[in-house]
Length: 105
Image 1: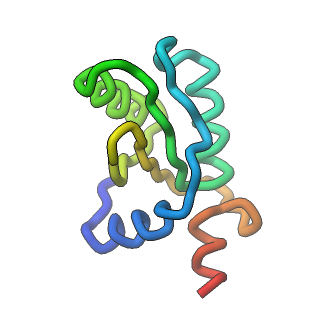
Image 2: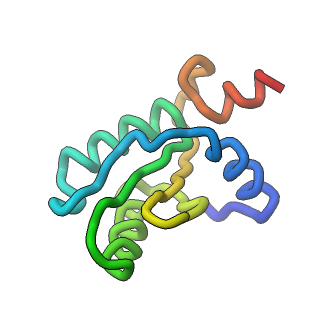
């Protein structure tokens, strides 16, 4: 899955108002973190993850590794926050950040 420029721009606009739903700390990508991120992506399709780890290089590795494990696309990284997108198998209009945004317009 590779997003085009216009798609990323639209997802960044939606993601701007979102709060992080998963926190990655010094324990790294534990099974619990991956499971929670997986659940959040399936429900919401577009999520923010906060990485509270030391160095920038370590954060960059964790951000990329999480995307790979989740089979998701990194839409944007700003500081310690990563914005991830993966279409849900069965999107729920009440939970999906993507569908809710399109209904609001």
